[in-house]
Image (cartoon, rainbow, N blue to C red; front, side, top):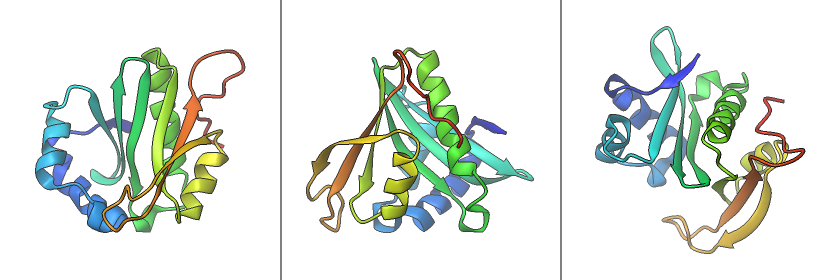
Length: 156
């Protein structure tokens, strides 16, 4: 079940941040602010297994644009469709808020993530050189969320 994160989830989210994003991981303070609602456009969603957070997504919604800022799955629980389920849930929530498009950035060398998003209808719209701390380029992807014949983040 996917549900909003609570303050009790912060430590687990911070741990997954470090595992999934290394030097680009967000600080505990930033995660705490996001989970607590101090950042009104930011929403944290989690998947739990026996009460333990095993995956999460972070989305920011401003006007008619949503930005998927994070999606991460604990390595022991990967390849079970959790990222797909989280992405589909983000898409449904975005559509419910009348968002027109969902954006995200992916590290240029992350071929698995690029393939994951391409398979779900995302298309490259730009590149951001030196976006990451190590100087790597980010690929900006977009998925239309509303309109005729739009597939909103299926779980396929």
